[in-house]
Image (cartoon, rainbow, N blue to C red):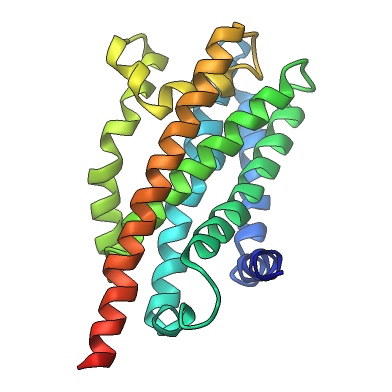
Length: 235
């Protein structure tokens, strides 16, 4: 029962810090803005907005949440309890992903309506958000300030943003090795159909990168938080 309790607690914290209120306003802004964009460009704008904001919002918010808990010395003693690092990572990632999926769904149906492939679209948002949030957590535990997090995250995430160049017509076969390629394909399924192989490739690619991100975030947590806390107590 630890994980459900931690998950609900993280959602309450996000409510308390105004994340849901902020994204209610942000969603309203995007809905109004997308309706003002000429129809021939609305689909591209919708894909870009879904990926860059709801899709990866956890990447940036996780930095603030982790650094807040770190500055309050919560993390130093948290894992003395039976609570596991794995549960912490998944609770943070899943709670922020719920917000991502909910926001993306509201924006999409408000502007583009329902579609036959909406489930695949939401799967794309879910997997994209999980990957970037877990990846962002791995970056966050290596930082001590928000400025440091934003600087380091910009460096770390740059390579993952390269497939966005496809939106403006630039393509490269190496983009297929990055999770962003799969994310864009799945998100685009909410606007037009994609092939079965494209869907399978996208899901598998995001799952593989999600596992890699989790292993790295878990190792970062043990190295930067738990080991340092143990060394401090030993001294």
